[in-house]
Length: 344
Image (cartoon, rainbow, N blue to C red; front, side, top):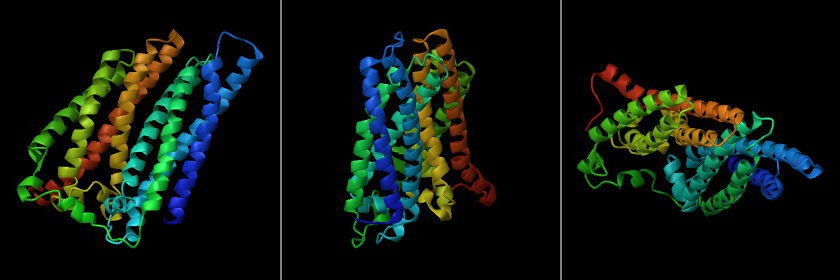
């Protein structure tokens, strides 16, 4: 197991995050059992005070989790490769972590999605004096607890599995996927032109639906369309980036590695690109969830939920535009500089 300060800092932050959510979960159980907004007794007043304190604890946990995840990704892509023999980016580090590495990332993203939903609903809740959504957010906190516990356990397993004496095959993993140049030019049976066309069409449709959902926050169908298009756009955007557009960052063809985008020689482009991708993955479903939630609330809370849904749609639009600038922009710049596209 490595005792690198960065990993120790991440692991300590993860423990603190789990403790905060565990403490908030104790309050969430009491809320689930005894919350009664019509009651004006001492027990309900105590619960209201405890719910506000628990919300603050979860907000801190959310912030710490974001910070720890960003730090972990930076360490995996810019620090740990220098310690793992044969590793040049996060691909080699994940190999060294064995099965614990992918599980750790999956659980971290699941935890991020849960707390992202909690945060959006809490914004609606805090805007209303009667706090109508406290019970709903209490259940979300209870759902988050096992996910964060699993993320902590997976991080521990990944750290234990790391062996700095065992070489890994970093680039070989990328290039061994293909047995011929023709295979490298196709993904799931489709050529690069097909994926780029699908990416372009879905991006235009997603931008249009995000604008519609933002400007008509009180209507449900634009948010439903936005979420559906986002779920279709996400995998196609990832494929178009890794298989085609990343070449304009790398300057070489067929290096289908998502982790190399995080390296300094590529200007750390992976951080804003994949952050924008994650924002789309989080905000588009949240927009439709808030739109559906608004229909079940009293008029004041309904207005606030619609406002948050509109903000989520706006953030989706901005994230798509940022992703587009950072992925298609280098390709256009390459074309202007050299008068040709990277194809082959």
